[in-house]
Image (cartoon, rainbow, N blue to C red):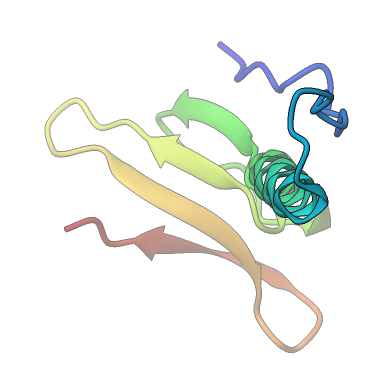
Length: 102
């Protein structure tokens, strides 16, 4: 079962403020809307970076560059499931590190 990524990125649309006569208030509201759009855009970008490589499995795949920064849920029949992330080992290789949840 694969995780479905978002299929589109939100776009900033300038709100219609014809009914607001105060130019400063218009600008404040426009700036606020732009900041919110940027925040949602950043959340989208983070989701793209943190996509799960594999949803689950009984064994970790071999750590490699294509898994770097991705999560893997290792399922265990006789113990708790464990969450892992693939990271660079600092000497040109890659390794799975267990993520501790609390």
